[in-house]
Length: 525
Ligand SMILES: NC(=O)C1=CN([C@@H]2O[C@H](COP(=O)(O)OP(=O)(O)OC[C@H]3O[C@@H](n4cnc5c(N)ncnc54)[C@H](O)[C@@H]3O)[C@@H](O)[C@H]2O)C=CC1
Ligand SMILES: O=C(O)CCC(=O)C(=O)O
Image (cartoon, rainbow, N blue to C red):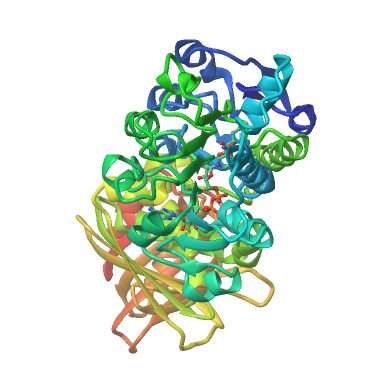
């Protein structure tokens, strides 16, 4: 039975789902060293934000198939390391959207009305009505940095509070911003005009210290900043200085450069509200993300696709369903051409023809690469790491798409160039879904792939087929089917044979000695 390690606390419903297919060990609070010790026994790892999945942990996870982040941000996982190792990384892109947006809004209103301090004051038996004069958000400018799922929901609710929304997101169109009732502006303007600024961007090299000394200098002295996205997007030291000096009016922070927050002057400031990374901490969100991610882990362990894999671009279950027969075709053709090419492969040309010449068909290229590398890497290569493995081996992949149709509605043509020359194959599907090899080294054929195959390149002349048949018979090899493809009579031709048995040692060199045979290849599919 598969084994799943759950290294942060998740809703029990997640454990229940995982238990349908695996032994689940919930072990929270482990150090990196402790995880490295035990991770080799596990097929899957599920976590929230407390576990940091380092390269060392990934590399120790020799059996890991999938890492599931019960949440949105995957910045606590070394995704490139996982990808290189063929491990799928999944998240829950929408499970906690509302929770995080509502937390940011709660932070904004708490900040504007001093709710946490007023609460503490009353609980300390005081009645300080004059100390807690607030500010309204109505008709104020809210600067939303990052107009994705959370930012959009914050914007929608803030608009209903009567706020004007200035949004900055270089990856969002003006039409989308208009639809959301937001004014798309550049960062300079957002910083200069906003009364409240709320951050909803992922942590990337571009967003690291997006708010720092220089940017704070451009803001209104009355501005209040809310960060419920990621620590490190604000330069904490610069923020502390600005809050201490009164350069800005306040800040509300759910996330920090170091979590848990260690010793920090932030704790001493009265114009700051701090929460311990609670953005996703609602019952609804925790059930949502646990179900979302546990189901994906379960599916992957059952050999099914994941719906939100962050490192298999384009291969969603919908696309997978649509392309499934063609994925098998692409992989088989990749495997076939790599065996024909034999030695080192320098480049692979992939031509997607007819109905396959669409944007959605990118996974077919990956499937072809997977097939190409399967001889060398066996089960180590998969849809996650195939492209990286090819790149690291110096294999140049050239894709072309041609929407015109030939004999089949869709076909895949592969050409491998390498140390032993160039070989090409084309494959297509019959209406029954069966695979046909329709072209080999530019010779037209029509054969189904089979476990054991023999291909020859020979001169089209009388008697040659009989000689090959007799030779195979003398070694007790049974021929299941045979086809010859040629362009001109008595010119060059190819012969494709499906065999019931593997070719015995030494027979291939006997075949190449037959007069008229130029080359022969055995292939196992
Ligand atoms: N505090 C908490 O508990 C939670 C925090 N988060 C954080 O919130 C972030 C946002 O989450 P979602 O809205 O679901 O993600 P999303 O992917 O829907 O939206 C992120 C938006 O940021 C934009 N963006 C990316 N780089 C940018 C840049 N350099 N400048 C401006 N905009 C940029 C993207 O175009 C996208 O529209 C997550 O990455 C995660 O780190 C998410 C959930 C809970
Ligand atoms: O797991 C959590 O509570 C944090 C959620 C979060 O930060 C995220 O989903 O990106």
